[in-house]
Image (cartoon, helix red, strand yellow):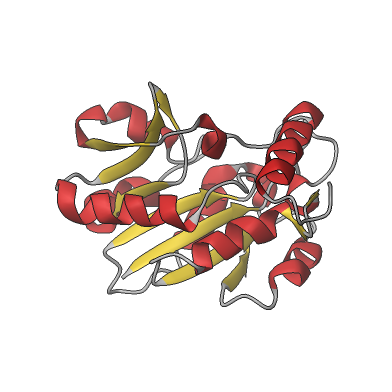
Length: 205
């Protein structure tokens, strides 16, 4: 059992509005992330809400996803991560963390990380473009259960990855686009331009 946890709780202070709900084509950004997860080889998908939880839930209610609310979402990403992993079942082999503001992540990328987990023998699987590490990231649950369960602050699982480079298996990706997230208005406009180019039949942002 490999479960994906989508972290969608943040309020996006730098952006000035909730980036998860910004339109991208015909759907909000978080819908694209959730749909990619549902169309991948992940066995289950959990989405952790926080700010404007009802609005985020409304846009993905038709997808086969378990939705969990982090009441302490303002404390940082680690709290949302902890909220999600509390829902993991005893048969969990690995957990993949996805970010709600990376709508260019594809089922193909998610599947390539899962395949690498089974073939590499490594316990942390990350996509890399050149020397740039991106998301989503997959962790072997038994290996990293204790470390993931005791994280704090707003860095999430990044500190584990940085502290244990020997455990990381890089999965090369062909384009930096799938590593981009939305932190600023400029990021959003760039994302819209790429999405419109790749999906000419969809409406503009």
